[in-house]
Image (cartoon, rainbow, N blue to C red; front, side, top):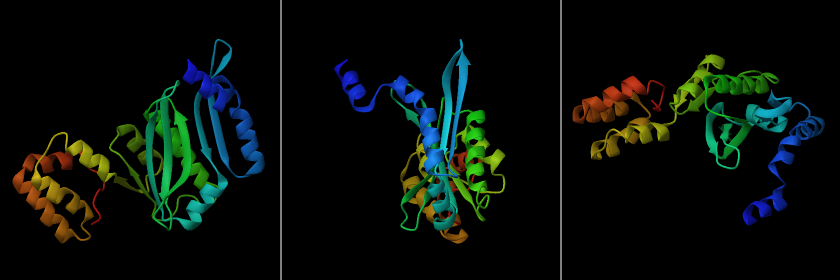
Length: 224
């Protein structure tokens, strides 16, 4: 209880934070024209209840379109506080190779509906300027809902799979030095010759492993 009282004293209580969302939206739109702040809610027993939230600040959108390579990493992470859910983001890479946040959102769970909604708002944010950047690449994990959102909203974009997530899933099923030596090497290969060389080494050692990759990881994950 002491910890909760301290958090309330420092940051305010959750109910007030929810009530302040529309004030936050109005302030952002007043101070930063062109920004997008979307708040959706349910009405339950005549009371407004939070559903989902999206924000894209105009300077972040402009910075991405004019100063970053056309690449977006899209993912979400769990909210672990009093109210559960997912914190989603679309993140670019700037000229220093640092992460550059473009937009973010909050929704209850990773569903097709929520990810399509999020990606539609990402497209709307970029559409205010020049639309989808030429050569846009979007990188996600292998989760079906997020892949559906990208496919539905950005069918023209190159859709890549995050190698970190691929390897994490792969190692749940397959282990061994041959994969330690050749899986990341295949992903980093700049030309088809080196990719095939590493791929064949894995294929000879464990054909079921390469069959698994062909079946379950069909998005682009190698440089070549």
